[in-house]
Length: 163
Image: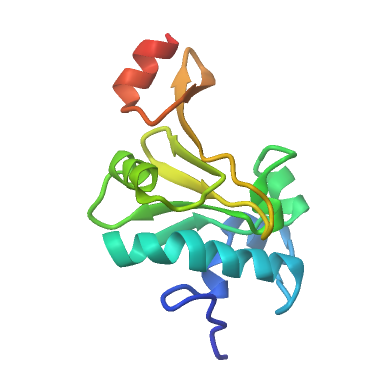
């Protein structure tokens, strides 16, 4: 089966694989030309490809999430993943903090970049024609709860500030 390219280095299957979806029998099909497909293509071209060009290979741990998958993993009901507008990523040879700081300095028109728990970076965009918020956040576990802080911080700094 031929892979469907979204940009020079990203393919549709990278955004639609999920062990949870497979276990629960959740359909991850994205039709070419659909709104989700167009959003994933925009995400790959505008945000992830420039990061790949600058930083190297990117692993997508969570891309598109149909509503059933988003619900199964306990995702936010307003998650941009449901619309193909976000991906959680890790970059070979770079810490999540370094990746988040790269996005902060990049000039890319992202909607949201979240340094999450020192483990991955959430990168979200807006649909074509909308104005992105350029929101930078750090998510940290503090006293058993998730705390979100404005800005990109190390985990030690985020925990200190939120604690």
